[in-house]
Length: 291
Image (cartoon, rainbow, N blue to C red; front, side, top):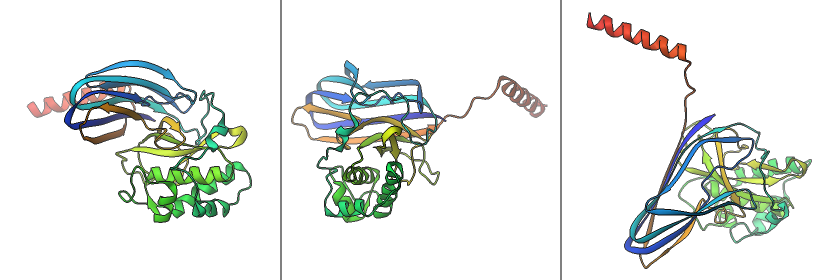
């Protein structure tokens, strides 16, 4: 599948700030499931600094904006070809030991309810257990936008019984780690939801390390593994650690944030003969109308 992505993140301040420094994890991952055709990152008034690939295999770029400035927009436009790998992260180069992802964070720390949920699931092997944990989280947390916030923890979302993809990812991470499976948060994009409706926002899911097979993705929010509708950007211990945009502003201005993400499929190109045939038919039709 070929996907065109437009992602704008705008920051505005009621009082101009002196400068901004940002770290961007907004370049698609390199692995067998996706190939970037073209990708452009721009920051209004920004100067690109250091860029590198970190130990988790994610591409990081630093940007600086010198003020005074009261509005900054980070814009991503690109086209990427994706392929369904059944959720398996094949060909992704990284040097971080998977055991690192057993470490809990405030967002993913298991409470009694999460430990009980994790303990109630039984699997024939690590992969089967991961699938069943994802199904259990899907059943325990209903997808309802607007009831949780960025700082909501997995335990809080489970207690509510409602949340969004970030909450499903955090809860599954907590359950997997509780069962001894390394798990991490993945940020990216989704072309459509499971029912085929357009998905107009960035997305998040979980990767669980299942032994020799390595990292496998699980989208508990949609009860599936990532396929060719998904675009992977980067990963981390939780949503904050995997955030596509991180940084700080120097000044006293109060910040307001607006995000717009659009993902659409690029139609397959027509063959030259088909294009010529349609052009000839259009020309003949136009001539008939003129007569």
